Image (cartoon, rainbow, N blue to C red; front, side):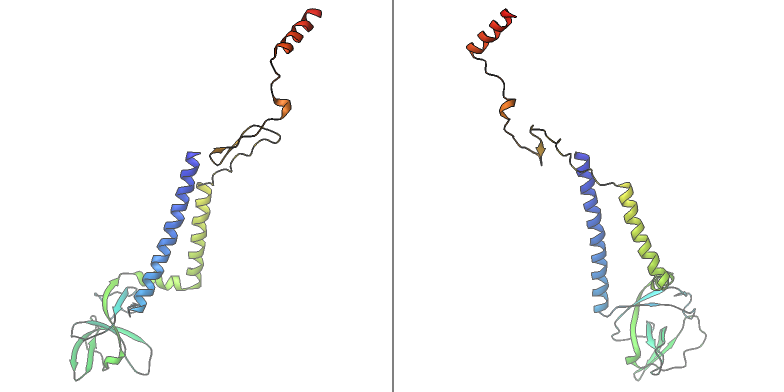
Length: 209
């Protein structure tokens, strides 16, 4: 019984931890996005060796920009394409940029309102995982993996057996929830009286047989 309680308690703790991790992750992402932080994937090699294709960069909201910072920006007001390059110069409110792997500066001039964020952190190769998880195949694989974990848990950590039910027809007291229920015996189950007259009658019957 003690082992069964430990298994049940372990299962509750495991499920609680899983739910807690998922809730904490969702809350972290919500706060992260609310504060203006964004995640971008590097697609080209223009920032090698600083950032390789497939790396993930994390941007904070842009403030006072300085030369040398790496920013993510719209390279044109007519396009939604984003570029992550380094600031080389600031002149009269115009931002000049260049990729670390490029020999020449970028041909475009960037306005401050085109800047989406300043890179503060990067995760190598994490972009491949993000692209995969955004695809239908990636979503299906995540769902399958979670279901498989639950099935394996159910197989290797079986549920405790149900409590033993009392035998049908029994009048004896059975433990119920750690307590004992007392049942009054039937009259037929009571022992025969041991009076003097009963003992004499029994002895007389023995002598006459």
